[in-house]
Length: 331
Image 1: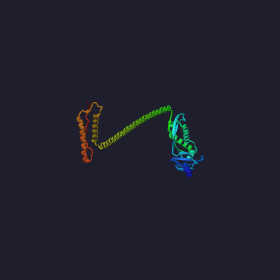
Image 2 (image 1 turned 135 degrees about the vertical axis):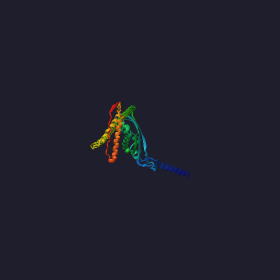
Image 3 (image 1 turned 90 degrees about the vertical axis):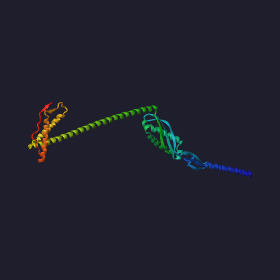
Image 4 (image 1 turned 180 degrees about the horizontal axis):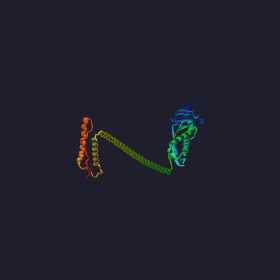
């Protein structure tokens, strides 16, 4: 009896252990961010998503464990010959993400190596079709062109290339020195051009200022001449008017006006002689009483004119005797 009970116990233990092993083999826990493929007798059946999953023990097995998160691959350095036969050293970085676990597992072997080699090949193709100057200045264009080509080529593998960046482009040292000399010469050339343009602009501004100054001076002279002519014209009009009035008075027999006119011209001539700067000798009448007499005659004319103007409306009256200019003597 004890032997039978002992044999049953051993059988039960074996069955329990076997059940535990079966359960352990049929339960799979997939971490977040991963997808696992399931193969039945070596053939793909389905994909295990993140979390707790069940498979058929001893029949199903896990094939590939794929990372569905965005991944990065460093593209190693390589030498590239540009279109103008310049040798440069280039490296970069690539970002991609698996979108279809089945294609990534069964359409390509060693996905990371395939993507890296494809990227290196296209880097040589794209950068080899450009000149060195374009290579150094159009890095964004290179990145965009590489991304378009590599992403299209990797679509059958179930991945999406999100970004390709060229990290370093290193020309040979002698080429770097030549570029530095060229840059220095170009900057010196620009500096000389700017200096020449500045001098030219300064000369133009100076000439323009002189031109404006001459124009303003000419306009000033023209305005001055115009005003002088206007003054002479008004003076001539006044002289003509005075002469006309004098002629009218003479025609009416009024000789006092003639005496007044002659006395006024006499005083003006004497004043002009006294004020002349180029005269070394002042010419005066012999008798100063003659000048006083002339002034007295003028006063008498004015007095008579005022008196008669009050009486009969302003007709000019002559004094008893007109002023007589005296003899002249140079001293």
